[in-house]
Image (cartoon, rainbow, N blue to C red; front, side, top):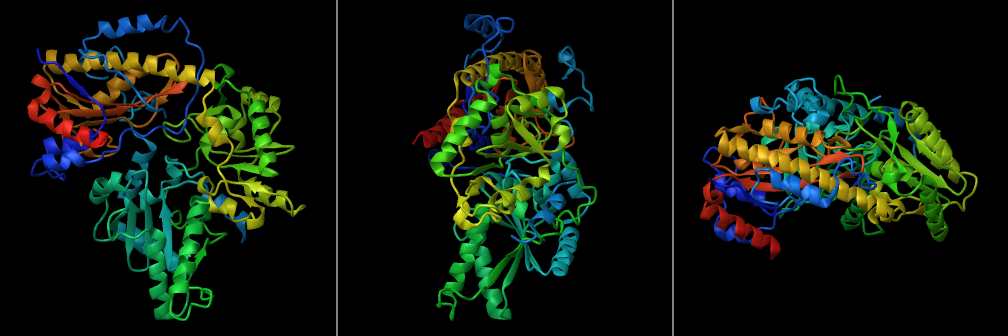
Amino acid sequence: MATMTLFSRAAAALLLTATTATSSSPHRLISNKSLAVLFVATTSARAFSFAGGNINNRFIGSRSAFGSQLASGRSKSNNFGSGGFGVGNSLSIIANTRGGGIGSSSSSIFSRNKNRSRLFSTAVISDMDEVKLAASKKGAGEKLAEMRERMEESGVDVYLVPSDDPHLSECVPAAYMRRGYLTDFHGSAGMAVVTMDKAYLWTDSRYFNEASLRLDSQHFDLMKQGQPKVPTIPKFLSDLATSHYKEKSKPLKVGMDAYVHSASFAQDLNEAFEEAAKDMEGGANGGATTIAEIDTLDGKSNMVDSIWEGRPALPKNPFRVQPMEYAGMAVTEKVFKIRSDMKEKKATLTVFSALDDVAYLFNLRCMGDIETCPVGIAYATISHDAVTLYCDEEKVASAEVSEHLKAADVTVQPYQNIVSDIISHLSPNVGDKVWLDNSRSNYALSRVVPKPSLIDAQNPVTPMKACKNAAEMEGMRRAHIVDGAAMAHFMAWLENAILVEKRTVSEVEIDEVLTGFRAKQPGFKEVSFPTIAGVGPNGAIVHYRAAEDSDLLKHLDDKTPILIDSGGQYEYGTTDVTRTWHFGKDGGGSKFRDLYTRVLKGNIG
C-alpha cells in the first residue's frame, strides 16, 4: 500500500506551484535551477501566547501515553512537530473611528450545520466573509467615485486607507476592514492610496498573487512592495507632492485617519515631504517650502465609513480572567516590574496600545473581538500611582473580571478617554514624560505628546512577553501535546479516507474534520487562525481559505500534494502546525521529491 510522505513548510508553496501548474492556472512553472535558489518564508511565529499550567493527568497521563496514542493511528510517520504559537481637535474624532462533519464516515464528531460556532471550523461565515460580501455589492469604480466626492468636499488630494485598526493589529475586527471593503483585496497587509484620478494598492510579496486576482485592474494599480522601481509610499507621495507643487504652487493635502496609522509612518511621511522640499529648486533655504501636509480630518468620520453602507459595529465581547496556573505572574507583579523600568527611563506614564500587550498585562483574554485571536479591544496606561484599563463597560461586567481588576488596583475608564487622559497627565507638569512606542502606537496618541515629553522606545511589556515563565512554558508544552494528539487522529482519518476508502476529500471537509479533532481536546477555545488547506496549486496561495462555493475549491486524492497550515487556541497555549503531504505511491515520485529537495536546499542555503 502506498504511504503518505510528509514535508516541512519549507518552500511548500512554490513547490506546489511548480509541480501542479496548468495552462489555466494563474501560477507559472518554475525551473529546477530557479527552485534551487528560491528562499521561501516559513511559518510565521504567532505574536501572542496563552501561557499555561501543569499537565493534568486526567487529560494525558504521561509522555509515554501520548506516544501510544500516536502509535495507535494509521499514520506511518511520527513527524508531528509544531511551531510558534499564535494636536488638533483630537478628542472629537475617536467616536467616529469606531464602528460605533464531516463526511459520512465522521458523523460522530459533529454534523454539518451552517450555523455552528466558528470554533468548529474556519469554513463557516466569518467577519472577512461578511466584508467580502459587502465589498462585492458595489464595483470599484462606484466606490472610488464616492470616495473622491468626499475627498473634494474635505479638501484633500490624496486619501490613505491602511489595513490597521487603532491598535495596529495584524488581524482586525470587521468594522476596521476598510481597505478590504474599498479594494476587495483581503490580505492582512497592504495600503490603498487614492488620488483624484488614480488608485493604488501596496502589498508585500506574500500577496502579489491574491492581489492581482482580487483587484479591479481598471481602477487599481498593484504596487508590488520591495520590487525594483516600486517606490515606498512616502517616496511615492513626496514625488507626487513635488509635481503637484510645481504645477499648482500649493501643498498636496494628504488625508488620513490618525487612529489607524502608526505614529512612525506619519513621521516617515513628514520627513519624506521635508526632504523633497529641500531638493526642490528654491527650497534649499532649509526646506522652508511646504510642499505637502498631512490632514487628519479631525471631527470627520473615516472616509471609507462614509461610503460603507451597513458597516459592522465594533465588537464588545466580555473579557475572561486568565488563571494564575496559566499566567504564572500576577498583574501586581507585572505592574511593579514596569514601574521599575519607568523609573530608569524617567517616565511618568506608559501607554500600551497593542491588544496583546493589554491582554498580557492584565491577565485577561477575550473571544470574538478579533477572529481567532484571544484579545479584546482596549488600551492601558500605567503611572506611578495609577493603573488604567480603557475599554467598553460591557467587557468588564462580569463579577469575576471586576473582582480580578479590583484586586490589582486597576481603574476602568471609557475606551474613548485615552487621548484626553494623556493630555491631562502632561498638562500640570512640563517635566512629565510619556513612554510610548511609536512603532506600536497610532498617530492620534503620539501627536498629543510634545517631542520633549516623549520617550519613543520599545515598551516594557514586549521583553516580558518574550521571556516565558515556568507556567507559560509548561502551557506551551501541554498545548503542543494535546494538539499533536488531535493531529495524529486527523492524519489517520485522512490517510484512511484517501488510501482505504479510495475517495477524494474537499479542502473544506479537511478544515472541518481537523478542527473537529482539535475541539475534542481539553481546554480548546477556537482555531488560532483560519485553517489553510490547499490542494495542488492552492497551496501556493498565501493565507488561502477554502470555501464551498469558490471556483478555486479542490479535492485531495493520491495524485496531488496538500499543504495544511493550522493551529488551535487552548486555555494554556497556542499552536501553529504546517505540513505538506502526498499520499501517492512513492511519495509522489522522484520528480516531486527532487523539486522539493531543491527548494529545501534553497532555504537551508
